[in-house]
Length: 374
Image (cartoon, rainbow, N blue to C red; front, side, top):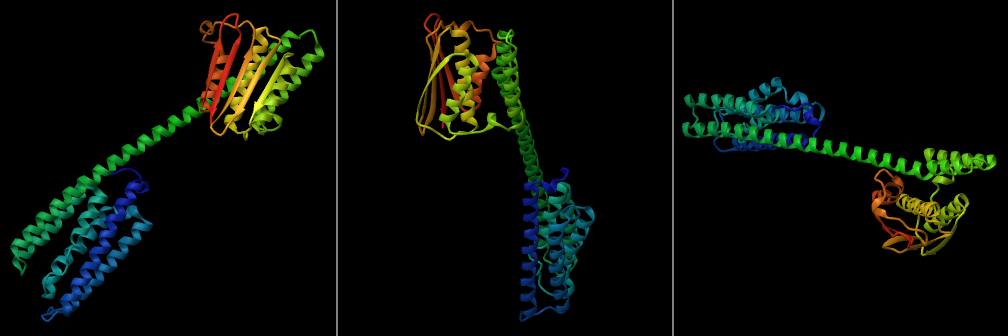
């Protein structure tokens, strides 16, 4: 099986390096054996044939290395594999022509591995059969029949096993890449869902709250205009990342600024106590926004004249308590479509790696605990 654009895969590149590396080693092996044959006491009758075969093996190995780096697709073509098999076939018969002992070493196995890489089991077996046929033809010459027959079996076995292994590795690589692509898509979808949820939470916290204030103060034109201008400014700052709405500061400063804004907007006293401080970041901003929603809920629904806020920052975690002594409510009876607590407080903090807990009872007020692990 031949994958599309296989050479772009890390697994394919590794396979190609292995077969090309074996080609280089096999060529060096042939050269060493050729030098030993020429320099031996009973040298070949035609030493020039041995030298020419060594040069051919080295030159063809360099060609293979160049294609590996520049044009791997060509290295996998049938034309290249046919020439590659022809070079290996010559190394098999060269000892007979030179009148010497065999000096090809492990070189004839190199095109079997390369064909298995390029064309799978079909390529490996085809090359193995071709080289086996050349090896068997040497039985009429000085070759040892037993050694030649064993070599043929080795070629065929190597071609089958290499082709099977290459197919198995490619299938595993394909499965891995498909899983990685699915994971990437899931991550993108999760990010989009979180962005959508964050946008819904922000719109609930800002735009919808401001619309409720405008409706409440509809008789006061100046107040309505002031609310509209402030909301427009905050919304632009949030959408485009400019202005005071997106400026990160220390956690304590963010809390003080937020409590002051809620006091101005909802005419309720917010008593803030902070212990320790931390650098503001995206998760800190999410914590501050969740605290803001808890304070706004207390201002709008509790009936209490003031809201107590306690914020503590330590190296391990940041904790915020929002407490009122108002009328309280039955948390279990809150409709599922109400976004104020579930989305703007609990889910917003969960998305940032924290947690939120609401403690409330009718007639006994409400306490919201917000915890963000650092």
